[in-house]
Image 1 (cartoon, one colour):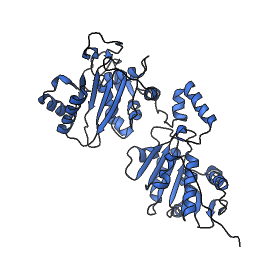
Image 2 (image 1 turned 90 degrees about the vertical axis):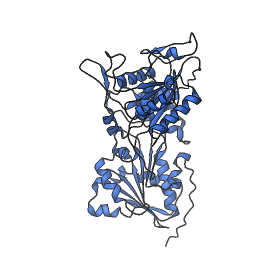
Image 3 (image 1 turned 90 degrees about the horizontal axis):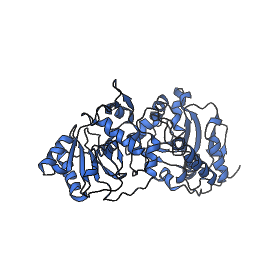
Image 4 (image 1 turned 135 degrees about the vertical axis):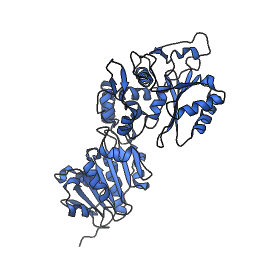
Length: 439
């Protein structure tokens, strides 16, 4: 009889993956681009746990024609790397002979009733290449992993905007769901040659770079008003605009429904300074918030969406003596240039698009959901050739939320010839985007 000596694994997971070992959550989703180290980190984390206590771990894909389609070889390679002699490799499973932990490898759609029942005792289910899991496969898998405190781990490189597992988990993550983005620059073990390849593609084909190396999904249509490339370039820029060269304009998109957010954008010319969002504030609370912002930040103007509850916010601010600072904006009203745009919404969003593609660089701060918000609306044209945008309700259905943050940015472009708001006679660098000053 062979005596099995169990070794203690000494694994140094990149910090971004530590939650795999430390956090308690039903769903742990890690997504991103090439060379982020997701597969190695998942394999090492699972081996760490399986070595420390008895676990049943299922490694699944939608369809697995043979064991070669699975992560079997990766697990086996990591066992060899760490010299874990207590593990034995069988044709379709890997077993820890010391504590009886077991790795099994399955295809979700190949399951009959008996095979599905065999997954009910799984402690951790790893869905590799989870972007390829269909809605039907997810509906089979999720309720099957039913053991108390069982976890489902998902590693993926997003393909499309509407990847089923992304829609199911990441659009509205709850307290039992972890969603983390990991890219090559987050991976301390990323080889230098991979970093060079990433930089080469970034310089030659920025749009493809965003998909391959940054983990962004491909846009499902070519008729988006704003492209992802322009947004990311603005996020990378670090522009500082002096107070005397452009007015501070604030956009306020007031929440309409229970799950919407009141979003506030601060823009000074070519620089968006910051975004803020608030939930579950009533009309009076939002008005008091804006009043405090006016007193503290002294904006040239605050543009408020009055198409819904924002009308009440506007009225309270007027009653409080702040009429000179605020501008009422209705997205659905007639555009300033009615020959080119169906309404103010299309006009203001078009100005955002032009601002992002202007010859001079512009700057956006990092903010959760900003990229998705700005690239969400589809553009179309009416019978007169005027630009109009996809209805908000359709965007919300597709995106899973309203584009509150991007709407707040669009509101900062509501004022024509904003140059006059500067309190100096001859401002420097007065460049315009469709009659709206941005520098």
